[in-house]
Length: 376
Image 1 (cartoon, one colour):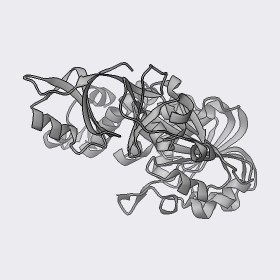
Image 2 (cartoon, rainbow, N blue to C red):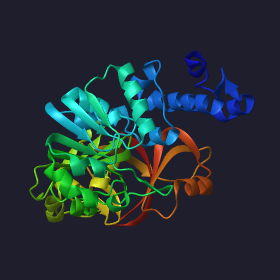
Image 3 (cartoon, one colour):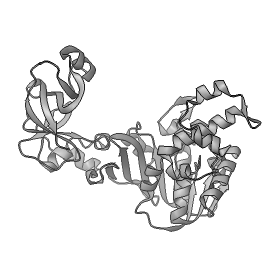
Image 4 (cartoon, rainbow, N blue to C red):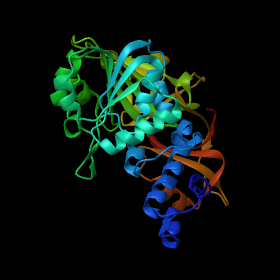
C-alpha cells in the first residue's frame, strides 16, 4: 500500500476516488487521506515526507500544524532545558523540535486518535523523549504540579467551522488560561495568528517581553509572544523576521515607534517597500527615522531617498514616468493608488512579465506611475 500511496501523490485525489472504492480491502477514503498527507508534507514537513510508514491525519490537522521551517526557527537560539510542555500538540511538529532541545517533553493532545498517530510517527522518526498526554489543556494545567522550563501553546483558530484569530475566541481560551500558564513555567511561548493585532495580544499576554513577527517569502505567517517570568512586560521588543532574507530582521519597541520622527517628500531616485513582517510590526515611522528616509505619504507605506541605502525589503530604482506604448510588459505594484494592478493592466493593455516594474503610488505630489528596476 505504501508503494501505491507514494506513486499516487502526483494524482488528483478526487479523480482517483471516482475510479476506486477500496484498495486491498481498505476503504479508499483512508488511502486518499494518506495521499493528501504526502502531498501537503512534501513542502511543509520534509522530515515526515522522507520517512516511510508515516501515518497522516485528516487534512485539517496538517493545514493547522506548524511547518518545519517555522518550528525550527522558533526554537533556534533557545538554551537546552530539562522539561518542555506543549499544551496544543496537534500533529506533533512543535514537540518534535522541542524534543531536540529538552530532556523531556510533555505533549498535550485531547484527540486520542491523533495522539496515537503522533506516537506511531515518533517511533518512525526516532523520537523517544516525548510523553503524550491525551487530555484537554485546561484539565492538564489544573493537575500539573511541576514547573516547566518552557511551555508552548498554539491555540486552535477554528470555532464552529469558521476561522478566528482573537485569543479569546481560540481554543484553549488564553484569556482564561494565561495566569495558570505563567505560574507553571519559567518561560512561555504563545503562537498566534498573523491577523491578531499585536497590541491586543499584549493586553492579554501582559508578561510578554518579546514579540516575533515571522514572514516567509513576504507572507506574514505567525506572531510569537515570549514571556520569561510572571512580571509585567514593559515595552517589549518587537522583532520583524523574514526567513527568506535573514539580513532583513528588524527590532523596535512600541515606545521607539511612538517617539520616532518622520518627514514626507515626493518620490526620489530610490523607493523602498518594507517586507510583510516589518509592516505587521508597525515600524512605519522608526524605519524612516533610523535610516534617514522620507515617507512618500502618511497613507503610503513606501519610503524614498536620493542615495541607495540598505533596507529590509524590496528596493526599486525609478527610471522614468510611465508613458503608454505598444506591447508593454511589466510586474505591477500599487500602494495607495486608485487602480489595482489588474485594472492598470486592463486600462493600458500591459502584459505580465519581463524585467521592468511599474509602480503606482500616491506621494506628496499626488498620484504617480513610474517605471522602475528592482534592485533587491
